[in-house]
Image (cartoon, rainbow, N blue to C red; front, side):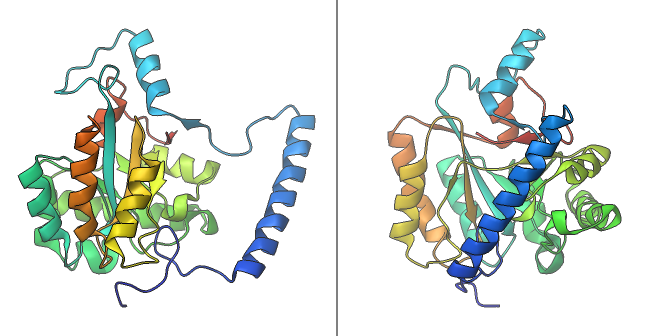
Length: 273
């Protein structure tokens, strides 16, 4: 599949805008009605609770934990650079750049046609100190699957990454950010915290690296989690400008786990700035 093919936030083709609008409205109305029913029953949580990095850190501090890593994001302007759906053909070039700039990143790796196609690159990501995370095996929308399907998508990728890198991921990103209580339950069972994002360049829809850079810089903020894809043609060329400008703004790049420290990512929980 061509790298610059139009897709949605995590790699699927977008629906027709008009039909999408109608569908979203119908879903919203259904969800609102369901929410009213749940409230009437005394149930107030329709979707999994989302925890911000600062909330996670504050809760950990209140429990007596202290930051032990190289960066304390309570006192530092931190931001996390993350890449989804790789590794791909351009990932080695990205790794060269990150090494030169001394920037750690978090890679949410896709299993089918990625980890299994580029095993050496997956090993290199881990060997160079980046955080290795799970983005499912075949990019199925987890909320469309039953429990066995969810478990297979996540555990198959867990096993492949562990076999190649010697590391078992503790983080996962659900495709398109879709999650629910069942996805959270299976994630908890597999020891995986869920990570969403605060800034995305929609790099699936353009090869314009300058536009990708501008979109990220416009959305960047303290404690942010940046979502990019190292599989699209315009993305890796945009990264140098993103890094240079964010460094000029006094940001410190960290992995997602470093962003949460002294908290430890809790399996099943959903983290979003």
